[in-house]
Amino acid sequence: MYRLVYMSTPRHPLPREELNAILAAATKNNNRNGITGILIQDQKRFLQYLEGDEARVEETFARISMDKRHHAIFRLKSGAIIRRQFPGWSMASKTVDHGSGLTSAVGELVKGCDRDLAEELLSFAAARDRAT
Ligand SMILES: Cc1cc2nc3c(=O)[nH]c(=O)nc-3n(C[C@H](O)[C@H](O)[C@H](O)COP(=O)(O)O)c2cc1C
Image (cartoon, rainbow, N blue to C red; front, side, top):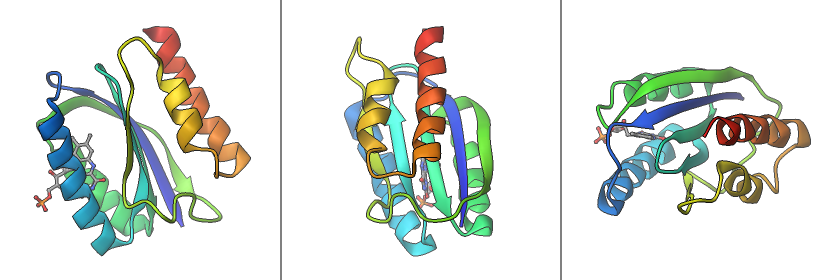
């Protein structure tokens, strides 16, 4: 099992319909590819966590990286993990309300995760919140 975490910047504030279209494509493709994960969004950033077979995750990330709806894509972390963390989610998503940080949104989504992974995702979110 392999995971990849990245952050990116939306090209422009995404209307709800556009986000729904992204999630629909993600759900369809990720189901087919055995990929699960989470996508968190505030007005300025995406934070996405993908997990599954290494080749499938890398191929999905390569496709996502070409997507014109976001830019400034940077990989925060990738590598082997012991078990799947989000078995029930082909792509769970959370939009952060105006004014509240990524950290609380991540906190809600990582409740069932292994502790080290939850801490890793929370630390990315906290760093981002501090930078805002
Ligand atoms: C922030 C963001 C996250 C995305 N996440 C996924 C994803 O998890 N899986 C996926 O297949 N596509 C994802 N996409 C969409 C891909 O970039 C691409 O549009 C899509 O995979 C094309 O699918 P299609 O050929 O079936 O239309 C994401 C796009 C953005 C902007």
